[in-house]
Amino acid sequence: MRLFIMPGDGIGPEITSAAIEVTEAASRRFGLALFYDYEEVGFASLEKYGTTLRQDVFERARTYDGIVLGTQSHADYPPPDEGGRNISSAFRVGLDLFANVRPARTRVGVPHNMRDGRTMDLVIMREATEGFYADRNMVRGGGECMPTADLALATRKITRHCSERIARASFELARTRRRKVTAIHKANCFHMTDGLFLEAVRHVHREFPDVALDDLLVDASTAHLVKSPERFDVLCCTNFFGDILSDLASELSGGLGLAGSVNASATHCCAQAQHGSAPDIAGRNIANPTSMILSLAMLLDWMGTRHANPLFNAAATAIDKAVDTALADPMARTRDLGGTANCDAFGRTVAGLVAQ
Figure 1: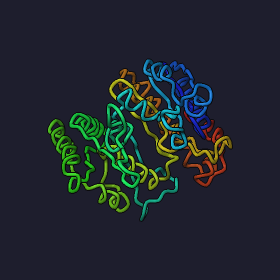
Figure 2: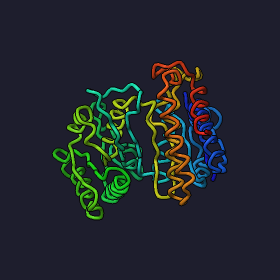
Figure 3: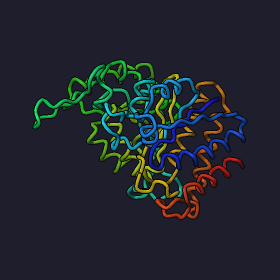
Figure 4: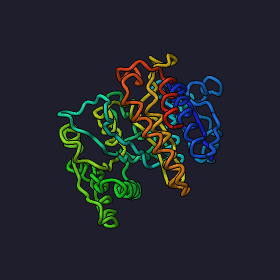
């Protein structure tokens, strides 16, 4: 199995290096025989090649068994016509990675922001190829325009096809968990777009009579995430709502530094930390690599399921348990969690636990 690794900007190279050390420990223990190829993207690529993502790099990536994408400072990239290509969007749209899977759960001993000692264990299934994102909802041109200097317009695209497949992925995941899906929407205002999304989710639900379905307005869901997170199992969301709710859920459960994430289709999967590039601490070896480590574990789990190889699934479970063990020790934690461990040291700790 071959992994294509693009470390990215800011803290991307540091957290990716730590995550690969953990992944390689799992590869040795479970006999996964992983091979790694690296390529520059982001500012390093822009400086050398005049673009943040060369097309030949993208085409190479699609030939690999798994993709690892580090953090990007895309808000600081130049305009697209000056080489500032949005890397995440390019992969999500170009490889049709429609399912952005974002778990959020509290971990024993790790400080979190839940009230009354409550716990959280949910997964946000975010559709990632359409919605209110201007760079992925038109064949030509962008989804935003400014007819005058004082008027800006945005176009939102929701299709039955994309709504049905993120719904199906949500129900399939719920079958492996607590068998409940909550569809997040704003159909009381967006009658056509969210109405179509909700209609599609309910249609797919007929295929899964063993999974419970309810729905919730997106504004109400923010209150319930704070007040009663235990009511949620799998949240099925359109792109924009899923993006916002996943950050809220991750912060409530301990912080974005603990939030793993993959972007997946039936044929490709990309591991990508949920947080940003944190350029203010780049190069200081103090970043928390947990999100990237857990994202790699999710990628291995996806690979195991896709290729019917349970050793990959076992490796993913071992990494997840090792992260729990490391985080339970206050001295092993990184600075953002009140510890003193550097980024590479935390990676070595988790790798050592995986190897046992």
